[in-house]
Amino acid sequence: MAFVPENRRSRPRGPYAGGRVWAVGSHAYVHCPAPHPAIALTDEFERASSASLDDGAEVEVRAWRPRAAAGARYHVRALDGAGEGWLGVAQLRSTREQQPPPATRSPTPSGPETADPSTRRFGRR
Image (tube, rainbow, N blue to C red; front, side, top):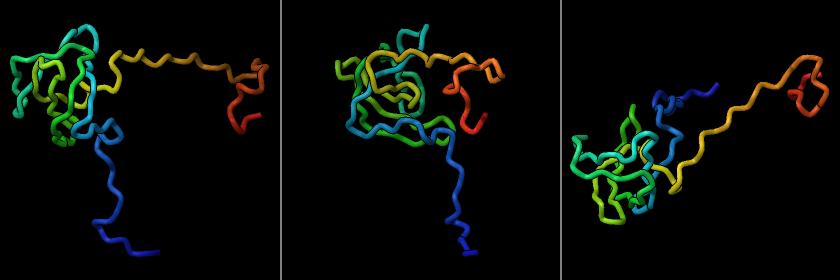
């Protein structure tokens, strides 16, 4: 067994790991889940500013700051000149329109009444 120094061991990732990462200079769209039609921008200290952006507004990412628990925050500027400020990573998306929520699949029967062999789980007879 090889010796692995303490600082080289794998560490669990934070809760935001695996989420979308926006590069500085890239374009994104504001994500405001219903029933909120707009979202207020904040300043660098997370105080609400006077500017707000509507759902689907196109923005340019100007800067970012990592935050462990809540995910990264991005400084954005609206391309239509509506304002600029900070948004959380959950408030940005890659498409102008909201994507519908993923459809939930009904459970497939697993008993002997399953006639179609293609619906069986792998390794089950």
